[in-house]
Length: 153
Image (tube, rainbow, N blue to C red):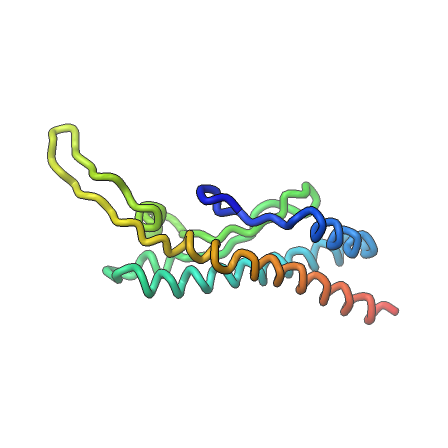
C-alpha cells in the first residue's frame, strides 16, 4: 500500500487462493462474485472516509460531503477489475487539496493566497481500513462461492 498511490493489493498467497476458488466456477458466476466482493470492500473504505471527513473537515457548503462516491472501474474479462472511492467533479474537485494540503501560494502579481493544512481524511481511511477491506473482499468471495456451490449441488 503506497502513500501517494492509495491503492490496495492482495498479497500473492491470498490472491492465489482466491484464484483457485474462482477457477472452479463458470465465468458468469465468477464475474458476479468478484464484483460483489470488491463492492463490499470499497464500501468499508468509503464509510471510513465519510466519517473522517465529517470529523476533520469544516463544513462550508456541503458540496464535498455530497460528492463522495464509490464507482466500478475496469472489467473482469480484461483482468483490471477495481473500484474507486473518490469525489465527483465539480463539487469535489478540491478534495485532493484538502486531503494532502498545499504549500504557501502566490499569484503571478505577488498576491498571497495562503496555504491549506493537510487533513488526511481520505489517506487515513485507506491506511486504517485497507487491510479490513481486503479481508472483507476475500471473505465475501469465499462466502459467495460456498453459497453458489451449495445451491448447484
